Length: 317
Image 1 (cartoon, helix red, strand yellow):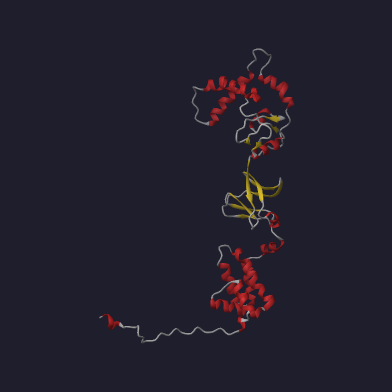
Image 2 (cartoon, rainbow, N blue to C red):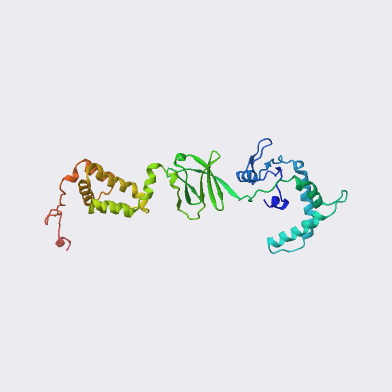
């Protein structure tokens, strides 16, 4: 990016070495490019043709340029001490200007004049915005329609559940791609354990839950009766996040559609008494008609005062 900005334009081809940041797997005919490097090349519209392994002649001009910089810049600075990278870069830039303006021995002009006359007109214009560095990762969509990235969870369309997707991570954005097509994009969050969810990514049956709150569920339960309200309140309190109990609460409250509100209130009262607060338990009480039977009072526990195995305190004297 800095090289292209320095040239003031874009070349047709880039010929890199087979370093890992550019080439994931070297091959003479079909090398695998690093996804980030390929993304960079696509942004600038350049072709990437890596040099062959151990074939420095494929980039002879670059090798010659390295030798020239070692002799005319690094050698000149080798006895100087620098206490910051910015100071070193400033000194290198100053020496580079001198080197580029230095006249050729066998040709007319300098490297700078040849670049301006021959190479700059051949460059294409830079894109309107510079490339934004991004990492690429693989992720699998969980059943809750989210993928995990650095401890945060981002939603993906529900049709991709259990599918593997590509994730492009920049400093500000998380993009999700499937088979080369972008299916989701989110602002990147640093909140670990948090969720970023787009409503349209959810199945139609789940979207309506977003409009519900614990308070709204409690108001619905209170209209049925105090026992129902107590059951709903305990179901919500039993989960770290109340939203995790919404399905169970909906299930309990909707039992009133099939059995009526009086029976649901009686079933909740029985469930509170016997301590089985779950949708399945309350539904079983209603299906078996136990809500219509009177609750038995617990019989007091009585123990005999005399028994063959009771020795009494005198026994131990």
